Amino acid sequence: MKSLIVIALIVLFASFANADRWCEWSGTEGENCRNDRSGVLMSPTNFPTSTVSKINSWGVYHLTTTQPEIGADQVRDAEVWSKVDNEIYLTWTVRDMTATEIDERIASPMRIEMYWVWKVFLDTGIITQAQAVDRLPQEMIDAYLARKRLLGD
View 1 (cartoon, helix red, strand yellow):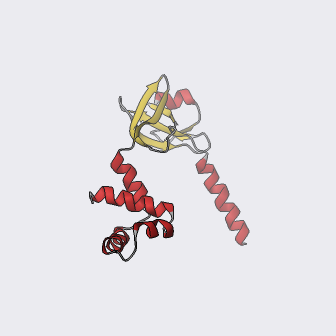
View 2 (tube, rainbow, N blue to C red):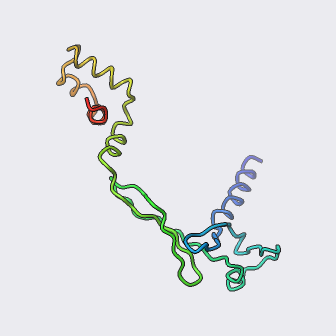
View 3 (tube, rainbow, N blue to C red):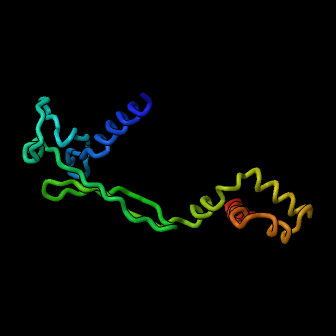
């Protein structure tokens, strides 16, 4: 019974995962986007069709989404919409991360409270910098140094 439910859920999800996306063109971007059901869209008057020319006559066009390649120190930025013939395209610009964004990513494994604990240990001489380097994994050393830069310490 359990496996039957799992199979039914997979089949239901798979049909939606393979659905095409269709949008109206506002002149600058896609809007009122919706998924088809097995290649069939409902018209504004609830008439189902799978004929692309008929769908286009309603002002609805197929959406092709392209995920940009993002490098290690880059992030997805602004959406870029375009319409060529009877197809709408969506992708994103990619920009380099700022030094602050990189430091925030590097510092994320070390909570701010832990930074202050290690800072007190180092400043009071409970532990030397050499001992800290020996005892902390490189990820935590990098996180400590990134926190230090972020706080301007």
